[in-house]
Length: 458
Image 1 (cartoon, helix red, strand yellow):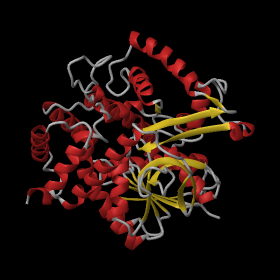
Image 2: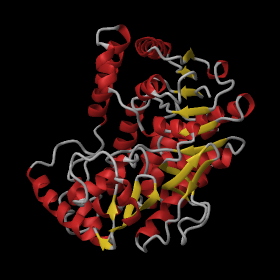
Image 3: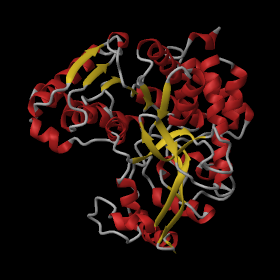
Image 4: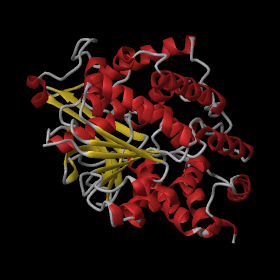
């Protein structure tokens, strides 16, 4: 069987562009397939095409390469359509952050929750739905994989407003098998250099992770009947003390372990993406009379992120133009969550992955269509969430609130209904004042007019 046709919308992606080239070039399952690269920026497209040609030549793989700035020209016969685009990512996340802060809302990531998550969805979801409408006509058999934040809101929106296509959504956080290995290493069940779970361990291991994207939790972790959460509590307590000596300056990782320990003690579960989860709760906003410990979350440092992206792009260009050798590319670039999933689906490998999709009752005390990130069985029929059980109360409340926020956000993004937008913003856990939320909405609509659909201004 020859490899699949994978079409990438947003070929210059900070996260996905190089890994998919690497996977297509090195996987026997992908060999003989087609990689179609799409980017609206011709210079970016030309760079990624040049890189892919060099990699494919160096590896002598039999992958066909096509590219275009017009997606409709290359989507035909796609088996997978990966959405990895982003429109002026740091520019608008910076705007979201600064305007929200003026209205009393602090965001350390600005792409999932709060005004940043709401307005990023307003910018990105209509584009994703348009792409899916094209896919429904041109390549209706394709699986659409959304890799654009806010992952849950985007995934919900595609299920609701682009139901003609098959879709699910991804985040790179709980990448298997490395995710499970990492938890077992921290619990002292595996040595630090472990790369896989030995087969004899699996029957004794019960690791349950789930929740809405960027707010997933380890709610149960036992091995041979022993509860490993107290062991992890001691591990993190030690790490938190060390972190206080040098918390770093970047907003997303700053004091993460200290925030994690507080959430662990509150809910009896471990947030797996604390750099985001600390932004999902109001506890670290600076509200209240007593000071937040260790401090209110810092604002997303967009300028630093842009510097990182620029540096990464310079390296990509050097791989593409030959200033950096292919040997280094093959050593430095690795497969990612999405590329491993595509390979496993196409090859029928039977691997399990964390996927964002309707939970179908896997979480027994949330509605069956709750769009959650859960461990799934996966093949070309799509993801099938494994049984999770009941979400612990406390965390359950956060999940339901964010599901409602994301559902309202997706509806607002596709309808331009200001009443729904206002409801979404004020359902969000970070907004605690109606007048502030209203003013924030008006300022963001004014500031982002160039990239929002015209129906917001009719």
